[in-house]
Image (cartoon, one colour):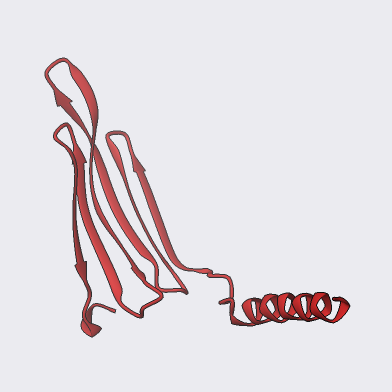
Length: 107
């Protein structure tokens, strides 16, 4: 019984050590740009792990109400090695994303 407990403990320690060894290093920001205007904003960034995002927004008026209209995109490298790219708009008509898988020329 003691041998079984030691085996389970040793297995758990080995699995934790393997997970820590395979963890990717923390991502850092490669580029970043932000512009805030009176009627909206623009920003973009790219990180060392393949994530990027770009967004622009402007004030919109719908009837008597004011809101913000946004369009942008983001991309990331998934664990399967594919680059996924999401382009979107968000306004008074809702959030409308379009998703595609990137090619090697997109990276």
